[in-house]
Length: 254
Length: 246
Image: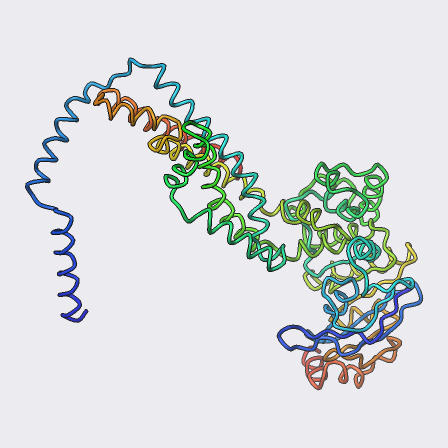
């Protein structure tokens, strides 16, 4: 499914965000990436769908080498990866329906996009997906009229309507309250399972990761420092991922 | 400021007054002649209605047409001049176009177009179109540069093409600004269309110039009053339209 090999990225500022990251996702299950801010989690997701250009390494989705694609082929690869964002990133002045349908831009011409002429099956899929995320009847509301949790549901619908082979999920709950966070995370995990696709989920909320994860990847300073089952996520491992600050921080929280 | 600087500034001012022949006698003579002109301008003469109405209509037409053309061109140039949506070389060309469009006053551009396409409203339309590209694109490009990158990123991530990103990600974010600027641009053009006639580019300004050169001061005053009317009406229309867009 997804194969990432020796992926590297150094920003123009000289910050090394990824120092040769490798892993494989070969089953339709969620994989949670944890690590502190600046560990390279966001860069990792964005190098996979090439919103950020990696400096080296390889990304293969169903055998297709994504790092060498350009133009139409690259857009096709992006369509096969549904992305969900921390700040939801809905187009605020468009309606819920337009936001969801933007997930199908890959299948219409520019002229059709201008006139909002989406094929009937795309519109039907959009309605169906809105119902799946619990937003039936919201299609004509403007995105900026929704609450945070509702916006993220629209974000999820936009990603799913792409019929992706994988979900790339970047801190989906950081802008939400704890209860909404859990509902949104549950929705992502359940819908991905229903569609039989894996999800690569960045998250910094370790308890939330514990609640939903089986497989966990720990990033620190652009390197993978842990990869394994969530039950092996001991205090010692967390210290390796987050540095000595973890113990003090979590004790202070208790 | 140091005394030397004060002295230098005073010397410069004196030199200006001397070299421009500013003296009380000339000013006094001018003022009395102005009184004479004003006396002959009253009462304003509105009898030549055909000329008046024709000139006013032509000015409104010039303003409207040049606004439409200017906005279409202006949106295009603005996109090319927004650093966050185009590569650097395109951006440089776009910015260059804007700077060029803003360099010359509309009267200079007007003279050029009158030379190129001859006297009349076509020169006026072209003049104001060029003039608006500089203004409109500059402000719109700056608006495009401060839009929310996250919304653009999300649309890109769906596999949308560059043009589709513009339609779905950029345009909705700048549309209120485009409409507001268009209305304001029309308002400005209406004002400018009353002056470019002076260099032969059509509109009510041409009628005004003719009236002055034939010493028809009463007709000239009528024209000036009509211009005041147009500008006021334009301002009212644009205020109402802008409130409707909010």
